[in-house]
Length: 84
Image 1 (spheres, one colour):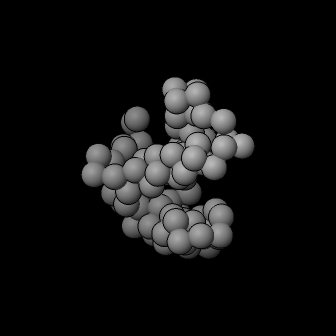
Image 2 (cartoon, rainbow, N blue to C red; image 1 turned 135 degrees about the horizontal axis):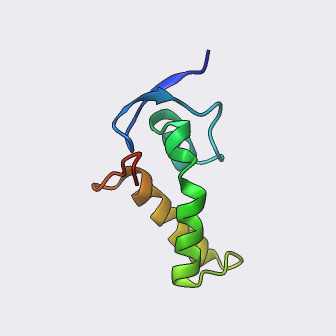
Image 3 (cartoon, rainbow, N blue to C red; image 1 turned 90 degrees about the vertical axis):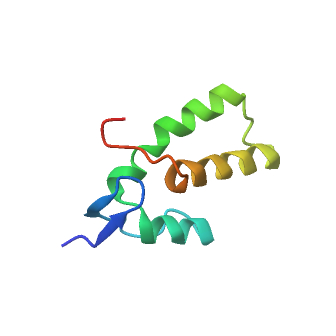
């Protein structure tokens, strides 16, 4: 049975990720507080952000911006709904 988390993004109890998505404090925070359903919404949002800002992910500053946007996406004051 998958582990369950109260998803900060979708504001309800849902199946969580099997493991942290990447090794860092943010990865652990996502693992503990974000559902698989909400995490699966990130790739489309990530693509929009990369295209909107014209980010080159070889640039450390661009990766920093993307991490900040990821944190805002999952934990910002305005949370998404499943209808988003």
